[in-house]
Image (cartoon, rainbow, N blue to C red; front, side, top):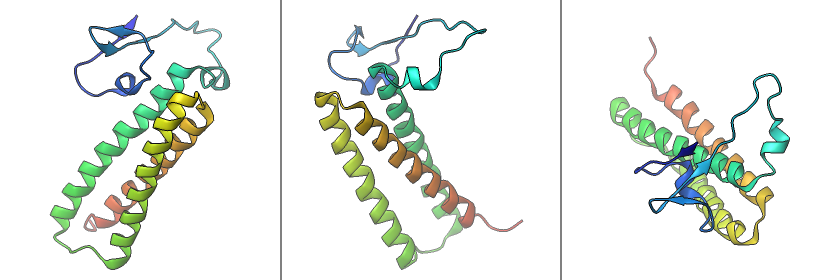
Length: 138
């Protein structure tokens, strides 16, 4: 089975030599045996699953960034200096993660791509916390 989409999706962020279907990257999924599911260590050793993990993290981060902007509008509060500094630092970490991921794509360094995915997941968690703090008390 092949997963494809017209929108940006985790498989759209795959390397250039990935299988393509109508000029879009396609991730072919093997059906798993429900009695003996594969271990996560085995899945993270394949290039397709590592890039899928990174792409999924990036998509969730974009969703949280949109939710954060809506929360700021609803709160009608200016950004504090500390929050502004934190957001600048996290944006710098995300930019570095994207740069490292592109470099690791050519070097076939899956550990670096996984580290970038973890950094992006940490940024997503930070934004989720800030959204919760911006919400008014019940």
